[in-house]
Amino acid sequence: MDLCIEKAAQSDIPALCELLALLFSQEVEFHPDPAAQRRGLAAILSDPGIGLILVARQGGAITGMVNLLFTVSTALGERVALLEDMVVAPAHRGSGVGDRLLKAAIEQARRQGCCRITLLTDRVNEAAQRFYARQGFQASTMLPMRLPL
Image 1 (spheres, rainbow, N blue to C red):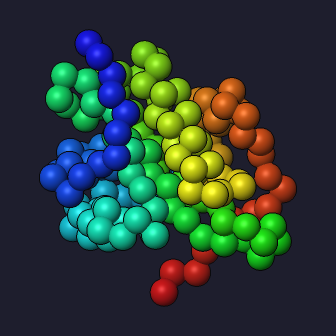
Image 2 (image 1 turned 135 degrees about the vertical axis):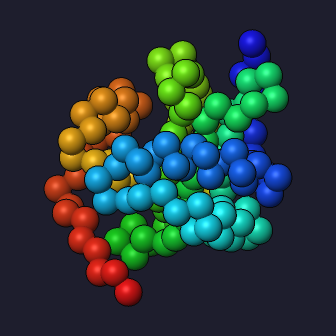
């Protein structure tokens, strides 16, 4: 079946929420909240300045997604991206969908003038860490900290 990587549309939000529910149910810090996910996805899709969402489609069905958010690094003096979410449906893992999605996201970040992509992954998710390392990502010495507001 042909794999197509393209920008997501508002009509894709229900399928994207299902993928995010999978992702958040395997992460330590996050839990699925469909209403919150719908709001976040709609905000990103309605304003390209915020970021972009790419989807992998096979036979018309969405089998994976990646989400980039844009900001400016004062350290670099340039635009940068945060890879916020990346998930592939379990039945399609190991088939190259994730590789294609991530390569497309990296290319889109370059086209948007970004000079770096940063991502967070669970410390215990060694498979994800190996996947990102194969794509050239390196562990940072920076420690993420959060303040819920």
